[in-house]
Image (spheres, one colour):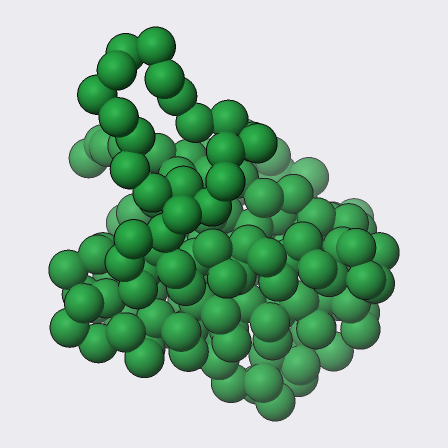
Length: 188
């Protein structure tokens, strides 16, 4: 049986790791390829319970390495991409903004280019509500999809830039995309 392949970037991180667990366990009809560079935020031990399952594979790679990514796409022919991989944490972005631009902006562009070249069916970009800036303490205000982007840190600026690149690849090249902006994720 041939399974549709889903590339999950950042699948050893907190949010991506939970997504990988969910998909592997609940959707055996998909092959889940977890691509992660295993930096400070990546932890593969959380996947010990699924590492031998037939619909899961781990690929160690960095999304900023263009030739590596294109080679992986050429071999794997993914149908879907769910892009969690990112440098995160505002405090870290203040100490070293460059790595955030490299990973969050350039890495996303490399993935978008691969998705365009290999004609993926859908590119899901996982962003953050921090691209909207600060929310007032007024309980009647909230962010919507129409809220202007007002990032206040190198982290949120790099995520806003990657969001705009994803949008541009949709508008310019017709790449099918979705952008999500979740907030306040917590768990084990």
